[in-house]
Amino acid sequence: MLNGKIALVTGAAKGIGRAIALALAAEGAVVVVNYNGSRERAEQTLEEIRALGADGCVYQCNVADTEAALAMVKEVTARYGRLDILVNNAGITRDNLIMKMSEEDFDAVINANLKGCFNTIKAVSRQMLKQRAGRIVNITSVSGILGNAGQANYASSKAGVIGLTKTMARELASRGITVNAVAPGFVDTDMTQVLSDSVKEAATAQIPLGRFGKPEDIANMVAYLASEKAAYITGQIISVDGGMAI
Image 1: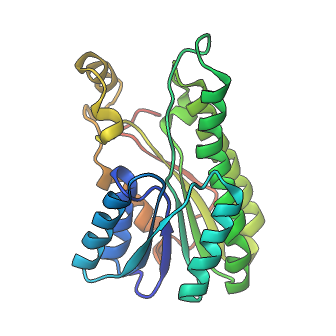
Image 2: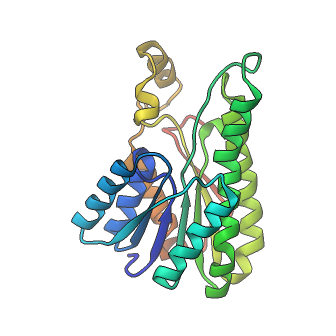
């Protein structure tokens, strides 16, 4: 159980982030729902958290903005007095073949997916070091492990998250802070619903379990890694992908 724990989930207004926020709330955590775009969807997530008997708040912040990320963490810790769990879920895609990929699209994805992760970890590290305890869970991707045509920017950003996860695990372990990553495969979200039927069929053919995952599949693993049950697990990249990365 996570009773009394304060959790910050980035990109929590919808999809996997929303499912993670609800999973943590169901375990008793107070959840800060970070969002960048849709306040309405973030408020809906907060309503669902409260319907579970938990509490939390919403906070608008583009985590790729270093000063904004720092300000968010400062305000959260000032409000609640501590910060126990950070889940770095915020991310974007701007897919294209590398011959057609613009520098702007490459930079935007690296900034959102990798630099955003760096920004929030740096911002929470001082507080967690002071507490001598903390859980950091980064959402990477099977694309960061296997690579994926048309995703040079996305796969690079998610591979970078893997390196960042392992490095932070080494830097923070002596103070009782664990840092792990979850690598989803194809998950049924807004991001994948726009794919054509032929693309979905081709993707499914690569999955040994023969289906896309659900956001809850990812959320359940994150909730476990955030709990005391995972106190001796750090620096690990755990694939939740139906067997794609076997």
